[in-house]
Amino acid sequence: MSLYFVITTTATVGYGDVSPATSYERIFCIFLMVIGVTGFTFVSGALSSIMQNHDSLVSETQEKLLHLNRIKDQTNIPEDLYNEIRSAITFDAKRSNADHEVFLQNLPLNLRMELTTFVHHQIFKKFDLFISVGNKYFITWIST
Image (cartoon, rainbow, N blue to C red):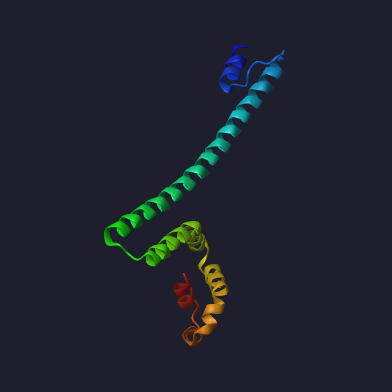
């Protein structure tokens, strides 16, 4: 009976109006509490990780913009150039090339070649160099 109360207190689920009466009910309740606490721990950990990654990206972007503002103050760069650089920084922060590159690197070479060739085939068709070379390894290397 004391193990049940220890688990109930640790899991912070409370005692409620109805308590388990038999040993089987207590074991079942302990099992549910352990599963519940474990599930809550995993969900809160995943949510925390997502928020931390988002915060780090926002922080990195803010740091770049702060550095750009310092450069602007020190060198008096033109407003249009400043706005262009600022737009490039914010655009770069919104798209995630790192995830795309990691995804491509984890693909087998033949699938990576097929995917990059397909994704960039409109660009390759415009240049005679790519058509004349025709080497998929070269095109994959260029496209990444």
